[in-house]
Length: 512
Image (cartoon, rainbow, N blue to C red; front, side):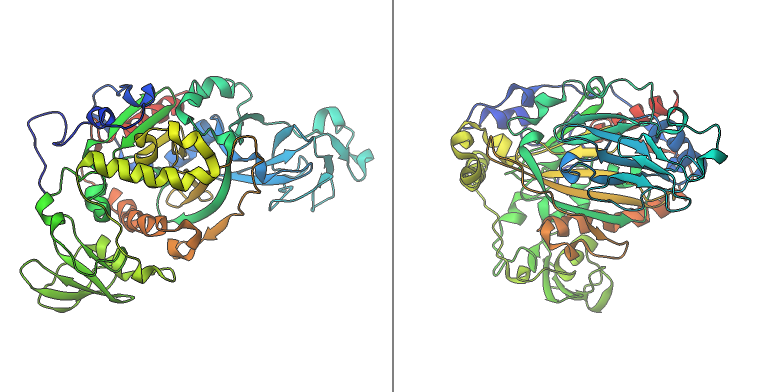
């Protein structure tokens, strides 16, 4: 690596505001806002990632008391359409009761507790318990109790389904099981200004993939909250992203990261990445931006690595040495090159551009302007290069990550049932529609099990390979947490701002 200690409070390389000064269009003022978190340190006990007691505390004081995104209103487009939202052993029903009204209820029969719904449903006229036949109208009103004469204390007034507090933002449906919770509008604050020029009301869910992971939900979420991991986890991004010069800010329950693109990471030696690589392919022949070693796919599960001194070795996709003089390789690039590929990816050419930063950023932005012109028309001519090029990703406490501007990514992280060491990573791609047009129908959820590859969801495109790089680490993070002798995890003052902000809010929430 080139950059470690710099003698300053930032990495070497160009600052983000300097990049904005180069923009060929007017840049929204919010991009220049500086709202950093106060200095740390932030130290947490690794036990919070595996402790049953801590998990149970989260159920009682987080999931039962916080605003959380349950679904998109397009998931239940018609009256009677119902969705089951499960979180950490809790279950709720989200139902459209009229054309304009959505309600939420605990997913439990008030007789013996049997779940009223075990899966999403369309066009229901009632909720009928399969155990003893108690029934409720979809607005929660008690409808029928078999042998009601035998339940003299049961009536519509006493045993209608209790409503769960519900709010809506940008087409998303939020619930809060706490009857005394602040209004959703107060919880969200001035969030709307961060999602211009294409607010979520103008976006539809084109992709929805849910992957089960063997790690705590917080560990998974934190892996996607900062660019500090790029240097080791995403070597394929180092020649296009200024990872260590990302900008971090916090705003109430919202945090933001902006990672500049169209430039080299400050960790990279420019001379290494400038060397020509004959036959370079995006997924099957690449150069490691730090070591300069070349990784070439021979077949699935076999990768040839050639070092700068000419030594070679053969490795599998998990970087296990198979043969050859070179006996060490990077697991991330072995996985990238030697792992599963979608059809046609093996011969995909490497599109990486080079040249001065301003020219690279303008060229990338102009390419995207033309790609979006068919959908958005002349709107694209008013939008800055930064909005097209840079990675702008937010986190809304406690567990969603909507990305900004033209990046369609929207994450949700939640526990898998009541196991503290398993979770679900959901990826939704929210694409814009022309102003005034109706949103298309949302994509159905494509479930991936623990051992499935993200590439098994080809609708993710190249993101599947990036996610594979991320989740390679997570089971080992989960296992290693138990072996930290100091019982302390410390987060970087600035580069892990969003994680520090999350833990600050989590601590406050759990202490209430």
